[in-house]
Image (cartoon, rainbow, N blue to C red; front, side):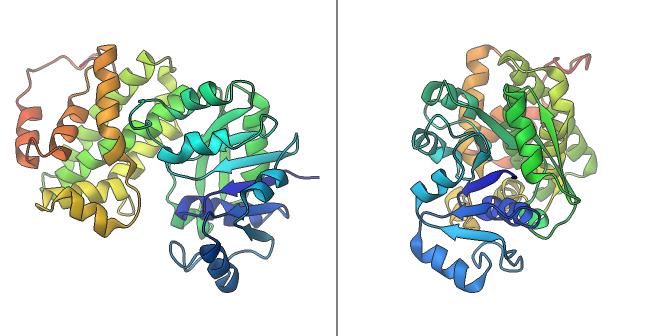
Length: 336
């Protein structure tokens, strides 16, 4: 018998993974909080709000009953995927029994506490099997079956391998990692850096500037990750360099879109209203900067993004501040 899979959250990414898994698994259940949304998806056999051109496989079942979804994926053969935004991760983890293995998809630091997903899980489910599924992935491309690679990270190697069994297919490669800290830091910081790259591109600063921001942004990400206990080499993988390049350059990136529109002079509140989706970089930027400050880690690009989001600097002023910094030797990735 294969893995019994429950995906909690029917946003774009949760839906896309459910579609991908259900193409080769008979035991996939997608949960949405809103009964009306479930009824609509059931009638249309697609997620009309987020992925209207990606029809559901016949094997994909739907429910708005959280207890039913959790019961479906409890025990050694089950796997729960949490597809909610970071703000809801804690409450979702608290609702799960300890015998339910869980991976989350959200990328960022929890607002207020500043915790990463693994820190939230350690506090709320210390005896349970937890991990993260991350990597360079636009939901729309995964839903359409276009080639994608992800990484499942957990200190529990059997859990990471379970994710491979659940999702690995001819269109989706899943690698494993034992460094959930590094995978999570990469997924969180790249969203902030994508805003920076969007600002630069929106100001027409050129491809040289984009390359510099991505490269120096990777150095910032690595410094913070190592300070938090991650392995440096993780940031050269899918959840570090891979996700950074995709999110900073891909036009489907919500965080990049925020940067592009900030550069055009649009106010942040209006951008977020028009976007209609969560742009995690907006909500986690200040927390990334706060954690960096607490650890004594230099992150000048992140600092500039926070200043723009807070409306303390214009995009042009932020670029000027970055370019006016004292010259440095490049050295290792840890140079500031």
